[in-house]
Structures are given as C-alpha cells and as structure tokens.
Length: 426
Image (cartoon, rainbow, N blue to C red):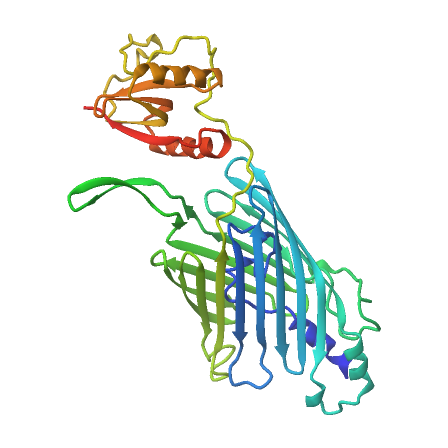
C-alpha cells in the first residue's frame, strides 16, 4: 500500500510559498546573504475546509557575516498533507563573489535531514507491517543548492535545486537513501528589485532650507517571474508584481499558470515585516474550498551588515607626480591651454568632497601637503560665505560622483569624515 502511493507523495513533497518575494531564501539558499540578521516565521493553510489539505509551518534565519563575503542560514519546515507529515531541517553556507563594484554572484549550499511520519491512528490498518517499517526508517539526508546573479541595476537572476536527494518513502533503513537526482525539481527566478540609496537633499520647512539625509528604500515597483519544474508534477510559471505604496506598506498580486490568482498585502518597519497572501476559493476550481491563506512574520536584528568589496579606483587619488605644485583653489590661475576649446559658460553648482575645515590658510595648507604625501589629490578652497578654508580631495559638477567618492573614502580609507560641500556660483 505504501509503495503504491510513494510517487504521489513525492510530487507533493515540495511545498509552495506565496511569500517568497519577501523571503527568497525559502526557495534559494544563495539568498542567505542578507543585509541584516533576519528571522522569518511562515504559516500556510491551503484549501481551507478540505480534510487532509496541506498545512505548512516553518522558520528561517539568515545573516551575512559583517565585513566578509560569507553568510549562513537555517531552515526548518513542517509540511502536513493527509496522513503524511514531513519535517526537514537544513543548514546553509553562502558566499558572494564580486563582479566589479556593483554586481555579485551568490552561491549557496545546504545540508540536513528530512523526516516523514504517518498518522497511524487515522490509517485503516494501523498494524500493517508496511506502515511499521516506514515509521522506523523515515529519516533521510536532505540538501539543496543554488546561485543568484545580482546586478546593481536591480536585476536578479537565480536558479536553485531544492532537492538534491530525491525523497523516498519505502527505505530499508534511515539515511540509506544516497541517490543523487538534483534535477527532479528546479526553481528558476528572474526579478527586478532596485534599492534606492540614502542621499543628502535640500528641503524647505517653515520657510527655512536645510540639508537632510533620506533613508535608503526599495523602488516603488518590483517584478518577479518564476518557473518551477517538477519531474513528477505539473510545472508552473508564476508572475508577480509588488507595488510599494510607501516605505511602510505594499500591495501585490500574482498569477500562477495553470493554477490561478493570489493577492498580497504587507507592512514593513525598520525591524518588523508582516505579509499576508490569499488565494480565492475558485482555485483550483469553483467552490473547491474556502480559499488558501499564508502569513509571514519577519524580524531584523542588529545593525546592517556590509559586504567586503574590492577596493574601488578613487577619483581623489593622485594620478600625476605629487611634486607638481598645487595651487590653492581660492587663488586665481591662468587659462588652461588644454581647455581652450571648451565652453567658458560658468558652472552654476560645484560639489566638493571635503575632508577638513580650517579658519587659517596655513593650517589648511599643512593638511593638504600631508594628504598629497599620502597620494590624495588634495587642494584648498576658500569659501567667502563663511570665511573658511576647506581641504578637499575632489571637485566635480556631478553630485552623484561626489556621493560615490564620499562613500568609498569612508569605507576604504582613513578619511571617515569626508562630506559634501555644495557651492553655488553667481
């Protein structure tokens, strides 16, 4: 009796998660490299009011190891359908390989165990030797693997193999199933989720203009496309859109081919994430059930982690002989013959990456000389507005270049106090 059902149970052993877009680690171990240490708890009740319908509960924990390229995670899931209950535990190691300054290749590998039990109290013949043998030999090895290509533009492409060891229900002994069949189930995803970095902006409040730093956030629109391949079941496409109405609230919806629609809603704070997903009672056919429900709760711990990135090429590093005399910026200089054909129209704004402010020129010039010896392209700018001398290492007309240089200086050099100075020319 048991062996005759093994193929059917096999097909149902890979649980479905509607909240994967909040916690993609549920499907791909490469997603364990998270900016924060994160704990997620998820519960799914499928096909409410149907006896023996799938019920799934689980928890995951993921974290990047700060100032490194490695991370770890763990997942435990209890998946009950009919008489069969499956519990699996996996521990994950993930590693990120930088592809330039803004792109990454993430790799993840998990290992653990999976246990299957049968509620013999509900079986028609609880003394069946096949059931007794199953109960005694139900724990087997489990593993999964995956990769994720993440681009600075927000594009992510991932592939995971959720079950490297095929689930087998009629084993002769625990941990006897060592057959490797990684392509029985395959999960492929491509999604767009762009992070908007914090920046300094000018805002007016009660008639006063002031500089404020915005918070980093996710772009308003996220798009996902998944393909789930199963050797023993119907393969499935899924398309999902998520609209971030604000920093704290989102709405979303998805469509699974050939299954149906799902609605999503969620809230997000600095430390807590809560999402809810609903599948209507018309799925997989009209009046089949009272719908399906899924709730996910996430908690972030500690401070944001940082990847160890390759040192960038700094714009503020000297690219010429440091013995060449530097002219202080508050002094006028002759016309540069190399730029004689360029436009002489005045620049409305200039942005300086400032690393020191002084009331006396002598002290500013002394610090400038010290920085030049350390291979920084330091110069002095006199600001008549506040009568201060500013030692800066970069002058540009592009605010984006200045912000990028400040971030790199703070991360990779001792100039942790680098900041932006904006000067308006008349």
